Length: 179
Image (cartoon, rainbow, N blue to C red; front, side):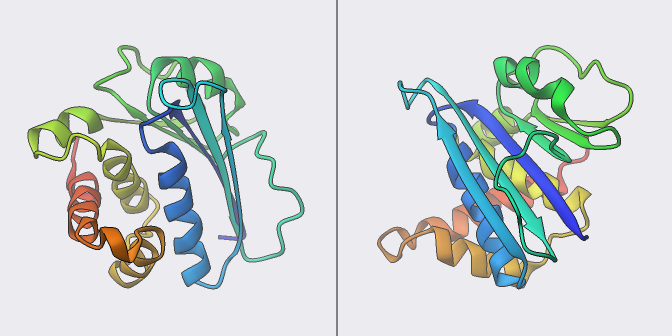
């Protein structure tokens, strides 16, 4: 992997920034150079939120992701806004529960995941973000249990340690999803 750029986008409250932070910490636990840049609208919860993450074997020169290799779209406005920005040959992961259309581009790999439905069906309605992360890591051949566990322990505070297992469960559901 020399450098991989990710862009997460959705509504505030969907865990966009948390998912990006998890991925950044995972990179840190693997001795990667990392950049994490959150961005959200003034409304916060319910407004738009996005997060840029860069993982690299070399120093990261700028935290700005204008041509993501991987786009994660958790709602239709995000897919509409960022689909054309994805680098040719890149990947678009999207929550097909909330997005009623397919990816229009033919030069990228589209991965629809009904993350919100899977989360609801498994009693973890707030973890669609982590279901998508699990699928991303599986598709990128990067689902390493040790680094996933280490990153989860970094982003989930000791106060919420009871959420470690449920987040891991959500990621496994995503990794095991065959759609």
